[in-house]
Length: 184
Image (cartoon, rainbow, N blue to C red; front, side, top):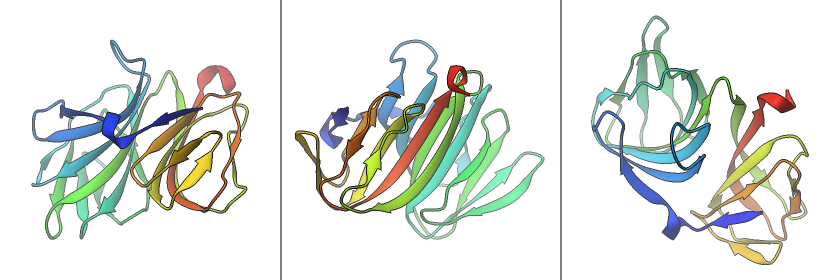
């Protein structure tokens, strides 16, 4: 298990230059990534960056709302803490409902694997890690001990496919589970 402190996150420009994202985790760290987890602050209406060959999973963390106009699919309203998925190949524009939003993003290269994004209230004793999937957990509320480390709101932790841990105290968290192709 590897704890990723919020102080270690990397802020970088969006691919299209329209804003900034806070990168929580990326693998691999050089070249084209297989998967990436980030949080973006969206301050204005505008186009999303395209990521051909990737599946995108987005979830609004804060704000009044955002509508996505997705090429060939229609208009969809994002709701707080409700994941929404779409192809990174498509042209997408975002329209803010009433001011800026903060959104959580999981992007996976399609030929690398599949992923899911969900929010959970995890009680003390909750086990993370499945034996097949990679798992990244981003803490929204609460503090807990996992292994020998403490995690706080804004921190994240990552588990390889063969790892499992148990929470010492309850957390509300965003959970990203990634199943590489060789595990499907």
